[in-house]
Amino acid sequence: MAADTPTILATSIGLDSRGRDRYDADAGPVFDLAADLSGATGTPKVCFVGTATGDDAAVITTMYSALSARFRPSHLEVFSMPNVDDVRGHLLAQDVVWVGGGSVANLLALWRLHGWDEHLRAAWEAGVVLGGVSAGSLCWHLGGTTDSFGPTLRPVTNGLGFLPFSNGVHYDSERQRRPLYHSLIADGTLADGYATDDGVGLVYRGTEMVEAVADRPNCAAYRVVREVDADGIGTARETVIEPRRLR
Image 1 (spheres, helix red, strand yellow):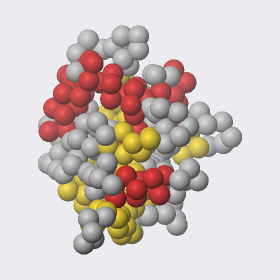
Image 2 (cartoon, one colour):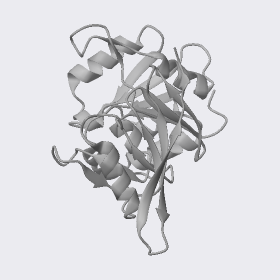
Image 3 (cartoon, one colour):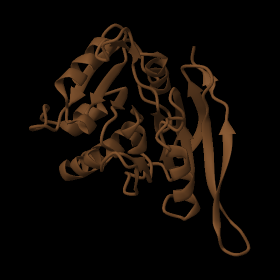
Image 4 (cartoon, helix red, strand yellow):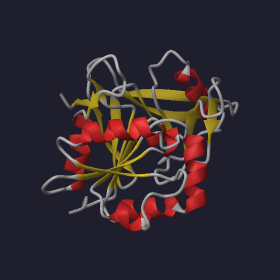
């Protein structure tokens, strides 16, 4: 089965750590939500795409370990060559495609080079739920803020644009993402958009944001829009969106 409307689950939610080792983790409730949104029957098929971390073998292994108890996991690699012959067909056969965090700038460049941007759009339009965390959230939007170019946060403005908004991830981090996101919207560098604290995700049906969800307390989503005063000076206005708790 497939989602009855093109669906994206864009988040600042990762795996649930089981201990001190970041590679020892479980799939949290956000993955069950993604599967539910897909309308999957039986054991949902979830494909992990780890382009943003260079198809790191340890990350891929972690995802298989985390997903295997409740899902049928697979993955797509671009390094050093695609690991399946028919990437488009593989994506279309999934219930959920989950994109990991890392460098969104590198991810976008490589997907476009290999035509994966078009394959992913075809999957989205066919009802495969597209989801992800951090870079895997930013990529579906018009742009956002990123550390892809170094420790100083910078804007990225060449997202895939499946969603006609900008996106802010890890909004409550200590790295000053919120003020930068505000300033970039105020000056028109970024379009109006949505932001998520760690632990929060956004559900889009078509291109409409229909719900915010969270896997922990004391976090929120935000709508941030540009307003222009009588002198033509732009400012950013932020509205809090209370998320529905997933657990």
